[in-house]
Length: 353
Image (cartoon, rainbow, N blue to C red; front, top):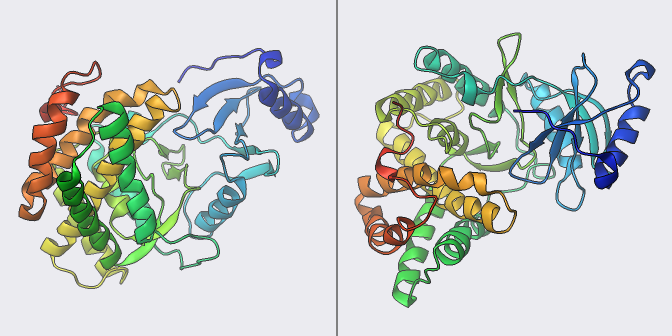
């Protein structure tokens, strides 16, 4: 990621953040010059400043970002031995933070066929630590049916409707509602636990101490226990072979049962939980990536749509109860998608040369 400098005069929040950083760092770091590391899928922006420094300046606008929640969840994760960023200073009212800089070694950049087994087992072991978090409804909202439905409807509104210009007729909408209910049931009827909600290769960093750092956790919820696992193993940005994903998923199942975090569920039922919750997530993500482009002017996510389509159709075609959705998607949406500039052959999306 390339550092860039924006003139402070053209960016009032950046100027205010620089002044705030000045007040919360040692005198010998002055004056502060912020170098942008870009933003994430939300509205947070990250900045490095004078080197050497172990801190990042974060602009998290209060209108869209909940810094109180970020601070509370960061503390919760650290209390369970998970390497979330340390906090040097915070002003949640302004939306300004100074947090630990864990470097640039994202799992997305580091993982390869040689080291993947070791890195992904470490990521799953870290996930098992996350799942030791106790239920705390005052801190962690429920991933309930209403929220699951709102997320799934992002697909209908933003991917099918606004990106592709397709409006399901009454019969098609009934079929989608039946599918959405099945996916919600799967999420709600499996064991519930801490859900990071974006546990994937761009939010995990390999630290200098060889441990994994975990970021972007402020949207955490209490929901289906396989959600983060499928986010990690069927990553929207990085694909691994299906047999490797199955092997890793069953490793997680074995360890979770061993640690008494799961009942002794069969492999088949666990993989069904995993697959169906993955389909729920990927249907939602199709809508979110479309919305990031159309509403938030972030076109970079369009290139990831074919891989998400691949995941969704592979799972839907595998289960008889879901094949109606796969057929509808292939007949109605795929021909429109194939005419889009962002489209590439979903059947090979994510394959490595």
